[in-house]
Image (cartoon, rainbow, N blue to C red):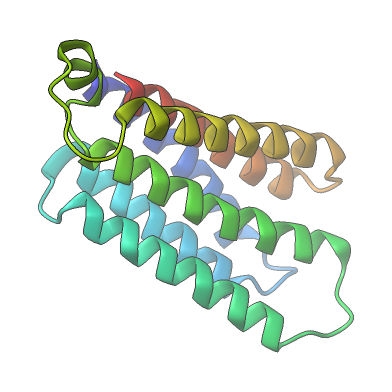
Length: 172
């Protein structure tokens, strides 16, 4: 079931990535790079697990910081939509890192049920990750509704749907 959810999460993420790539009116190369990193991490976590999920989480957090620093250092009078897209991409990287970390904890549901958990409480981790996913999905929905361009709407909706699907997979 978890593999199926991973596969379903990849579809909207791929659509969101394609929408960023197709947007020729705006230069969004950093956001596209972040989206591609996220897509590769999700694909690896879903199918091959060739790279530990914790490594992907660290890479996603570094990418989020790099994107925020790059866009912050290049402050210029920009459209509100550009700032919103950067914020959405950056927070998406952080949420995906949290999801991959929760999945890397492995057996969080079964371990919590049997009481054989050492270290941080899986229930706390589950609550924090669930709250982050729900908040990201809500912001994605609001951005989808407020956006005027269909490529932006598709990107926001795709990333929000992807985060929700990954959130459900992380809970299982």
